[in-house]
Amino acid sequence: MPMTEWVGELRRLDSEALEGRISPDDQRKLDAWRDELASMVVLSQRVPLRPGEKPRRAMPVAQMLPVEIELPTGALRTTTVEVSGRGFAALLGSRLDVGQRLQCLLKLDRRESVGGEAVVAEAKMLASNYRVQFRFMNLSAQETGRLEDTVFRMLLAKLAS
Image (cartoon, rainbow, N blue to C red; front, side):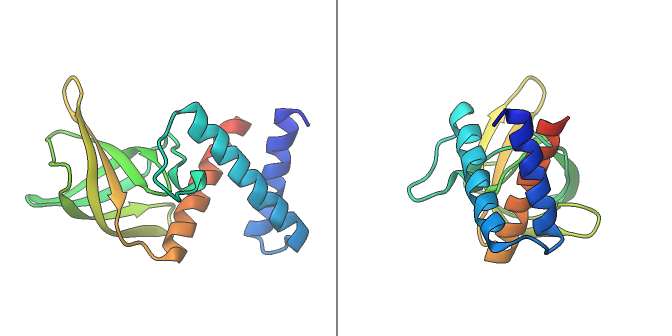
């Protein structure tokens, strides 16, 4: 099946799942295709997986979403530059220490957000700021699922445009 048709079918199945009207067979197909797409993205971007981690969790998508980070100096409202099922990356004006734990609230859309404790997984100095990667530490299975679903839909939107 050509890639454009496959993405169209993925979008159709995802839409049916979102509306709660997907058949069990189509849900299995959607899950398998989502895993296949995530594996392709993770492989193409050379994203390292932790032992036992599924590509769907690690799959990054370049996307701007509002995020609030509780820094020791106060709340910082900014936007992400990348989102995955693990967490997010943002550009910050000051350096944070790898391993530092902060409270973060990531807004997935107008109604939904996920948040909690996040650890600074990586901090890279760029020309005039820092690209900081945050990894959520204790999201519930439901929150992780919503985050992964959102990341998947962002990727589908990018592939369809």
